[in-house]
Image (cartoon, rainbow, N blue to C red; front, side, top):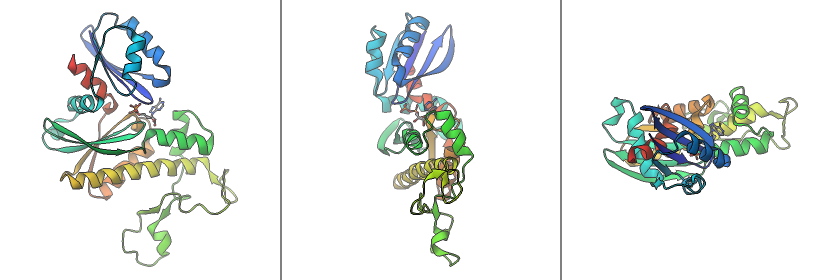
Length: 272
Ligand code: ADP
């Protein structure tokens, strides 16, 4: 038995082997004690390797000797286990859209963290709470899926009003740029903006910003393929859609990896 554990800003991801079977599991990072209790009970004697910002804190709660490894190393090692063979061969960009976003270039054995942005899944949850009062992740993404970005977002063609724009009129000119003076979140009637529409625009904004950063970074490093991972895509079809279409639109080749958010945990497990 053994376990690799990636304790991130929002979620603890665990990849473990028990009785010869590999399994995956998640806990909330604001309830580290639950993860520690589970590990002590389920894997009492197994070697553990931890990574992620909250790894040291979780290790202290577990209360036995554990290994540690740097999170970027763990993520870049673990992603190899999850990639379809067709992607394994050549260099690609890896964008880990977690609470925040971290971007890497992976070329064979070499990997380099080239940047990131504070825009990520945490931004979606935080702005959603402030704008709508919805607190739960599932409720936020369910509401957003019903929304229409056309209410709040200004497209290039809106500015040109029927004239021929110098760039694609469907590009977003300004996220939230259509919101008029005095607008509030409400029923969607009488100039108010529904929470569904506002949330659709929040997710669109994060998705487009992340995709734009990635496409530019990919171009600067001479690669086209962008592999997106992170729990931010779980159950969040609007984010996936915004990132996918914007990446393609700007000349990149997007790929979403199932269970990609477990890359760090798998990389830590590999270390044992
Ligand atoms: P981290 O390693 O920073 O914790 P993750 O890759 O686990 O990052 O992604 C965290 C993000 O995933 C959250 O900000 C949120 O947008 C999204 N998410 C997906 N499922 C949940 C959930 N059950 N609870 C909270 N956030 C979730």
